[in-house]
Length: 115
Image (cartoon, rainbow, N blue to C red):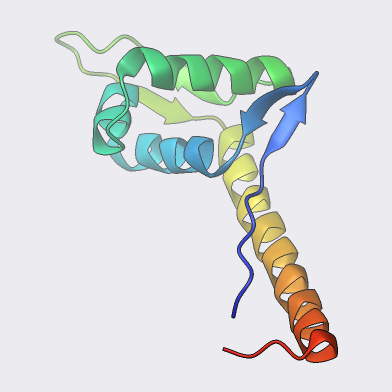
């Protein structure tokens, strides 16, 4: 047996950061494009844009440097805060999962759960 948890952050009861937003930010970092990152995740561009706008609004921080694509294909990059967010989210997620796994092992041992 194992434990699985889902981590997401809310602001005023609205989810603004979770694994989907994290993957989207990683995609933007990789491709330099919101559209390409969204396609890679099988998301519509409009859905991805909404997720990113919600994130920036909740944090009251600029996470992306957005430049129009068009012919110049300048694309989108992460701000320093965007890169920091990715790093901190990864660290937070690992700590929470490690804690949850440890506590589940304690629970399993006390309740005699086996695979």
